[in-house]
Length: 214
Image (cartoon, rainbow, N blue to C red; front, side):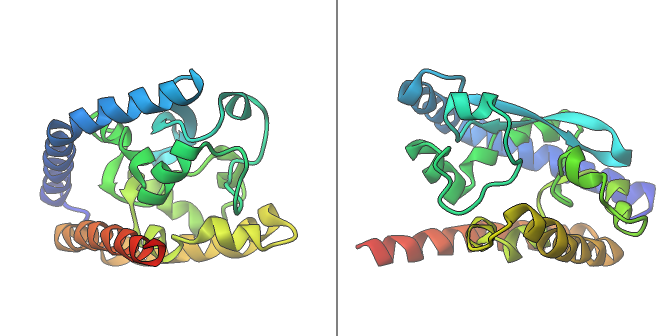
């Protein structure tokens, strides 16, 4: 996806998807914000600095899923296993990925795309090799191939004696390798396919979970 036409089509897809999704989901957006606020009185939104295209930092929006004091305190920028910092509402939001809904605003602002390598914090971007830094040549995305492959990342890290080391030495390199492969062959068609695959996968996971609980 190097031509001006391809980039224009991708931006049109981003605007259509994000604008349409916000138009349809704004009641849910307001309801989720109210529930988060009601649970512990803290802010509904969590803003974190991430590294965007060309290594430029930007403010990423998410629904807050951790207790307010846990958010304010220093800690690992990764979630590990059954993290006790996560609220009851936050567990639901993370499971369904609804905590990512505010990133539709990042897409409209041009800081993110619907499909692209997930944005990382500078702490870990500083460890990228020259080859891995190629993921910074495109806008980060709401979903990518690694997002689907590592849906159980928190559980994997929770089973490790040193979660951050496992993330840095095993999980992060594998995710970057998947995204580099995606960048080599991506086009508008593959982006549309990945969006559909993401929606179907999340829906299937939720249905399976409900079946296990019933």
